[in-house]
Image (cartoon, rainbow over all chains, first blue to last red; front, side):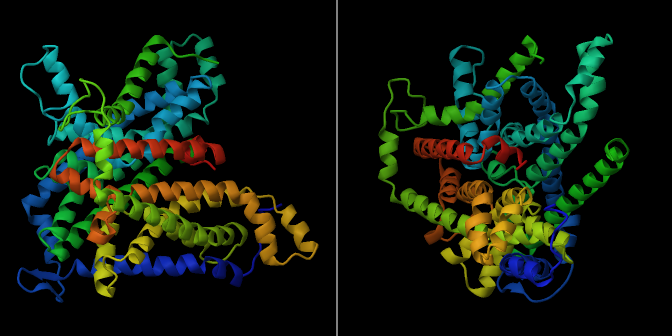
Length: 290
Length: 264
């Protein structure tokens, strides 16, 4: 009844959404447009931003090996973090789904709750754990496993570990959501027909949670590719990613047009990846779940 | 009902340790009695919690973050509620596009938003103002607020509203006395989620914050870029405790699992 009787008026919905729409146009539409325009401007070390228009910034990003390295590192990092999140997040969601309450609710909150804690705090925790004077290193030294302090700060490995920690809850959420649709009777049927636990996992559970794994992967990939605070703190100055590079262009080098071009490339790459992922998932699962 | 085998439980335990270890270490290091980062091996001390009080910069930033989050969450809800009702109740040209537009900040990397807002503010002269910063946060938290209000509004039974209407209540009275109370769990949950998201935001804010509008996460980030000392651990511990309290509140009013998993 409530859906079917949806009013057909023209004026009221526009009036109701007007405040949000005006704010969005002013605070999102205009700034994004300005950034897009800025990315075509030129920059001069002495004169600042020049009101000329060219593709020079984009050509620089595409041709300069400095930027190749940064983009390659960023997307390599995103890919690695995504794969690890899928490999540990999906099994964890499955284990959670087989728990009984109250443990299930309790651990769900324990695992997802950190999403609400500042990413700075979580990254600080990793800095304390994996630094040269960090807890892991000094513990291993004191029990004699290693002689020299080992340092994961300012390494690619350190960045990967910290980002997996920050983003794996999103994978658990996505897989959890698809597990809710899973009919446990199908698993039982497989088992009663003599399939091993492993076969049931591989042939029944895995195909059904794949949409969840894929949508979780998309979220994790997009968020890693644009992550700023964790790579900045753990990676430091040398291991730059796209987000920290844009930051440096804006607030240190002050080459705003180039920084804007980097931001636009990041945004477009993000949208292309999300859109093609959606297309892929729709095509792949249209027949099964359509 | 199935149960987990020993292998699954070992994996689960390791996973939970992985999730909690960095948070636990922050809380433990905060109680060190040393002047540098170390575990409180020679006895716990509150010196680094007292040190917070001796750093007015961090206290000021805490208040800035608090007012910012209060303002941004409230404005976001004030515009998200009518927008949600419009989208849920009416069929009008551009309805789908409008919803996508309102949710679009979720798709834009925060670093891109930071760049865009910084450019925008220098053009119109809003750089470094609390007002400008508040509106940037409204854009960031709006999708979170909108999703929960949309979920609450679309599950709403309209009969009570119709009854009130037929009994002569004005449109505003119907909203205030009937609609709002019915969607209140979604509104309250959306507000708290918006508040937390704004309070924690660092990537976008780092671009537009000025010395007088440096939020707590930005000040912590700037501090970490220079040095990591136990002061950061004690501040983080306070933040963890506050977040856990908010999580309990959120759980009571809306159900934490529903908010985190996003099925309203």
